[in-house]
Image (tube, rainbow, N blue to C red; front, side, top):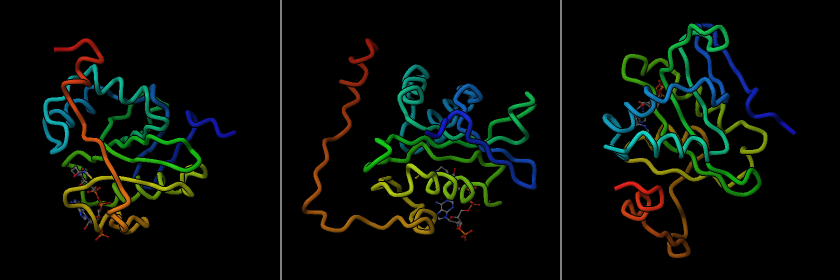
Length: 164
Ligand SMILES: CC(C)(COP(=O)(O)OP(=O)(O)OC[C@H]1O[C@@H](n2cnc3c(N)ncnc32)[C@H](O)[C@@H]1OP(=O)(O)O)[C@@H](O)C(=O)NCCC(=O)NCCS
């Protein structure tokens, strides 16, 4: 059994990717998602925290090494999965100053190479980054007539957490 908390990668430019949730900087993640993402503008910090807690794998991208306490979080992604047949990857971001130097691709390569994720039916939604994900085997859904979805209902989500 893999201990997910211990997964850790460094690259030659001094960046780190870790799945240790205790290294994550909730301020950085909430700030990006609530202000700069196009998919969860305005999300409360409490719901970001809950989504991290309940995701099987969360990936932090850091400038520096969080193990020595000097790292700055500059990216993130999280995976919801049963680790056998189904996975969903979302909340993928690299903060603007660090984009365009391969970190998003490094992150997606690591996620899709996880031994217990790589075989699963992997889902995601994107407005404009199709060609990024296509490099990791994602394709537009075929047989759309066989797929059904129940829409996100924020009112019910908020109620579920006792939020207004
Ligand atoms: C998408 C994102 C994570 C990419 O991170 P990055 O570190 O800048 O990406 P990389 O430097 O590793 O390269 C991205 C690759 O995907 C391609 N790409 C396709 N659509 C893209 C998009 N919308 N934004 C960025 N890159 C995109 C780039 O052309 C590049 O391909 P290439 O180097 O093979 O030519 C980053 O731009 C980001 O955080 N964007 C805002 C949030 C977002 O849109 N997240 C994805 C939600 S589905």
